[in-house]
Image (cartoon, rainbow, N blue to C red; front, side):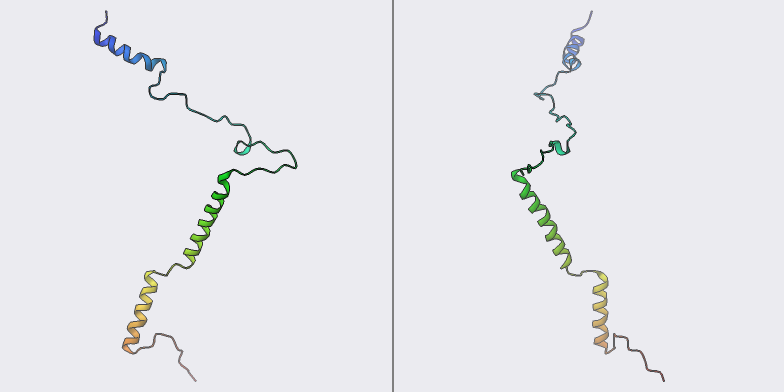
Length: 108
């Protein structure tokens, strides 16, 4: 004979054994693969595909942001340590009265 605690455990485990789901409401939704690209059937010859409302906004946003990023990268200030060191070295050499450009000596 089973004790009350083991009966309670069996009663709680029974829905899980049957596959009952709590707070899930329905089976998960799944789009069956149709074999067509993006699930769209090819149109008959002579017909033009109708764009959805969001497509133009996506194209403008995507390619516009790429163009903006390319412009920002092109005009980005040069903040490398090498550029700073070269400017600093030129300024110090000018302050000491030295030339920082190479001028070859004329040998006869």
